[in-house]
Image (cartoon, rainbow, N blue to C red):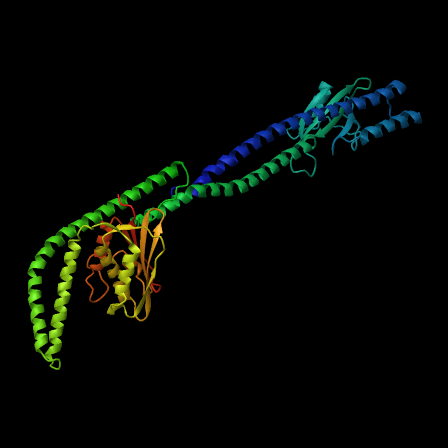
Length: 498
């Protein structure tokens, strides 16, 4: 049982509850009906046997009243013919399928019998070895029941005989029949009860099994869904929830589990925040030292490289090396500045601004940069857009970073669409959509981490700084991307800030 699925366990538990009562009720009804049928048929059959016995006595009494005792040597042909007619009536009278009427005298000789008239049967024994004829002769009237086996039969059958004493002639008049012939109708009733009970069992099983599977599916489907969600949580994915199907125990469990996942997500977010704060603290200390220890030597290197560049003719071989020193020094200086920017993002100075106007100016400026000459930058701004409290300089930094990232990702001709929309929930949504190669699913969670980059010359701080700025605006930044179909960034900013 422990290795079976729940639906099979339910079936094994419920099916006996359906089948056993049907069998029990069927047996009880069958037993009572059969018993009553046997009793009624026995009483009716005994009444028939008694009636035939008295009918035979009446026939013999009629003859006796008119002609006196019967004698074999009677010369009166009319008397003989009358008796032969009576004998024929008695011999032809059938009781059931094989029962008959017979008469015997006080010595046990058959005087009237369908086949053995004149034979002495006083020494006849039944299948149990009892002399039933002697018992009949001794008692003269009554009922007798005994097992009798005819030639050619495999086993004995119970025979019941009603016998009366015809005193004028000293005869025993007996009418006998086999019990199984009496009970043919009762046996038919029993067989029909059994057949109907089997039919009811089959129908109830046929109906109950799909019903049990349907009900068990209603019970197990939420559990299966719960198992899938648990497996996802085990793999670190907490984005799915268990569907709450009702107010029963499973629904309560689903609600509790969903709340637990929310707590896990909140704890993970708190853990990320704490880790981020620890990184920020370390970066703050590191950046302050870097700014002092590296910026000054870099400034000297950059100054001498610029001086040498001005003094060295362009056709000399060392001119290229001087330019490389100058460019790499600028790159190092930029990395230090970005590191300082990430570690010390200033608190935004929020002022109600026309977000569409700010983004329009940014797009116009970005369209003239060398990095964006191979792409077309379009805007999609709705009318009547509400004012949003933002720090214009910081939003400028975020937008330029996302536009340049998109332009660098696009090889050949491409398109970038900057748009805004208003969510009735009270959020202003800025979208940056490009036709680049897209971001693989396994990298989407990492692109906002500091120092993560896929570009050879990238610092991995641009999106991390953008996320910091959006977060300080009490907003969120997210990404949707499909490899080969481009990328779309969403920035959600609350219109009314608490």
